[in-house]
Image 1: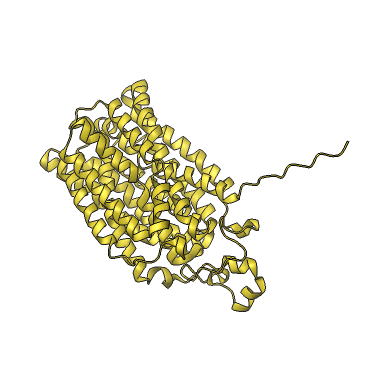
Image 2: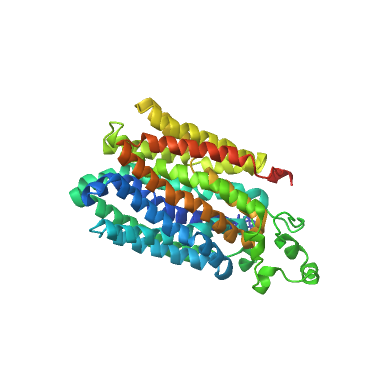
Length: 441
């Protein structure tokens, strides 16, 4: 009897393992370390007797910490490797979340929320930039879109999960929530260190979607395909800056297009963080929702946003980054305005659905744009640089919103301000270089 032919093994490109781990990093660094505050805020505010301005101040402290590492985190990842920087940053965030659960005063909470922000910036920025190294140009928007769904998964878990924990653990429930968030984040840090790899070349691979006979991408400066196809030609052309350790920093910090992208990114940071920080608080205090009902709507934001990065990342691959950014900012403008002007279940639900359908798409598009402009080696540094602008907007948003809420005894004016800034982002997007869609290049 003849030997049966062996079945061909179907090997999954390691880029997908990197993407899966990266998505879980986003789950911890943003989903738990940042958006967990949204669901815990009402109970934590009552437990520590915080004003709206102080509640906004805690969010600002977290975002200032994120801002501190937004530039240096990307630069460190470019020099020392995203794997190490991501794992250490996520572990730091996990420790800070544990300590937040033990805070007994506003001052202590400020310190630990700031430390959590530092860890988030040191993990989220490098891991998103890492995707540019693992996926070819025409796949970057798709990959970044999948990566940002880690935030959506967190909303899906936090929405129904936090109210259950709060009911089960009584007045100290908000502390228990932070302890759980911290333990999970530490576990994800260990997983990230085990799975992530700094580049496809380290495993003898090309980026997913790249071919050995593909020409180099002159717009991004990525010559990995050429090097793999013809090492001799690569040697004749001389080493790339990255290979000598002398990174072309002026390509990042001196590029007008990168600066303009950062300025547009400010609008997202300022506007969306007001909406997300005070989402549950507004529903409970002004929308007539119970904490459980607010959690369910928060969960639906997560479900609706689950594919938004994937969808809009793909759209940006097809129509270009500029057009996709303009459309998403316009959707956010409508969502935030509805939340303020139509505070009944129909209006609040429509607002949540619209935001969910576009929630994390702007970071995905911006991450892809950085890969287009700078190439995979410098993409983490470029993303870190534009995240500096984003971080400034985030840091200002909650503090200003809290002051407006205390002055007007309502969060509606702050939400209208968020809508106006998002509208400015839509207009600013139209000033970005048009460029051709990635698929046509």
